[in-house]
Image (cartoon, rainbow, N blue to C red):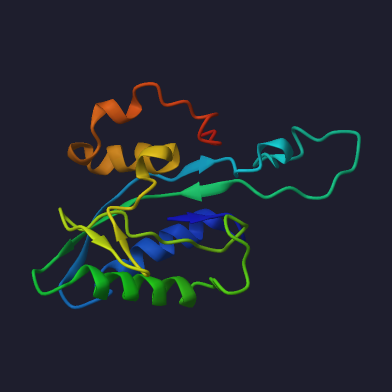
Length: 170
């Protein structure tokens, strides 16, 4: 999950809590710490503590940094990836996301991705499993490795350049 509008850490915490029981038989099993990462437009970063890094020239506001978190859900066998995905999209909308009005990779109140569903594979217009860009996103790999180290092969970190991924994390 990611958020960079409003109160991002609070939004992610609220979203994680609301995933517990989002469908019958779905339970929140683990959640990572909150990581902060720079937006894709590295040329115009707005640091989380802007007053510390304030410049003399006035520039248009940059995209705020993202708060990121990964959660692990336990699901009974009757829960399908499609049903869980649709429930997560409804939660996203309830938390203020409007996919029709936002630019791709733009600022948002919340972004919830279904990264994987066990060993299931899907490739439909709505859902691709596992998520196709996991290995390119340090802001996904680090929190994922924290709560599900068995899902993140060490080779994924070899040669991973956070700057090449447009990511800075603290």
